[in-house]
Length: 117
Image (cartoon, rainbow, N blue to C red; front, top):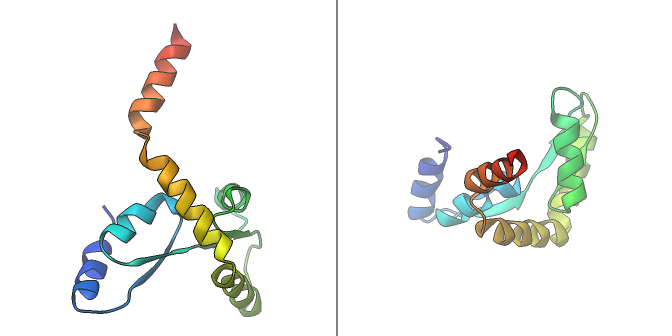
């Protein structure tokens, strides 16, 4: 569980309009507490960030910008682009709905067992 979720839930309960920037993986948890999900923008060229940025951009659920150290203008432009592009939010919602019907760990174990036969 994300330790920030209880805080966001309490802010929503107190009448605040909470917007949570995240990847589609956490969309359901964010919306369940009453916060608004906003697709994320990912920056970075180290560790796994380029691959995550590729997948996020490929999925249509957000924007990946592969730069090591983004400038203020790059951050501003990317966030504005993500917020202005309603398609990111719509695609993230589609992916979230699609993933709701899956039990990731069980499906992964089943697929591994099938391949081992």
